[in-house]
Image 1 (spheres, rainbow, N blue to C red):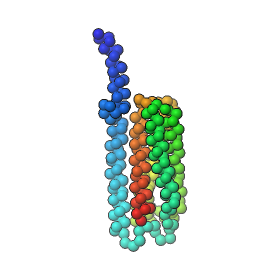
Image 2 (tube, rainbow, N blue to C red):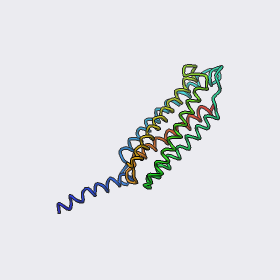
Image 3 (spheres, rainbow, N blue to C red):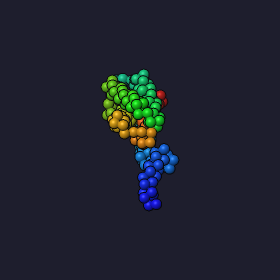
Length: 207
């Protein structure tokens, strides 16, 4: 009887782990940690947005780039927004693929998401090079570069996470039962996408 119990015990642990992976017995610690991290980031960006709107409300004169600088490139910002929104879809396609156990599609969609993220960062750097003003050029320059710069840093962090996910996927480390890391990075990437939509709306649409 004892032998049978000892033999069944590992199988029971495996079933319990599988149940946790699928959310049947609670949320995995990694996903809970990511949710808490995202919650802290929401407060962080909330403070940045509050600073931006306060600076805008208390700054006399016209709000925008300093005199002599180029106007913000709405078309480029719109294109970057489309790229990042598209990357959120491709990320989710990758998550759905790994839930089905399709490692090939996981690698494909993760790679596409990473490429789109890198394109976004390159476009943002190009935009910075064309603006003609810096972070020290007035209140608008400070708030503009702080808000967009911190978001860009988060996109870079997400790109690093995607690179790790892709490398692990290539090694076959994910399956339909073991893919919490993919889910966590996917949640973070969706958060980065939502924040950029808020940044784009605030800086480019609400001027």
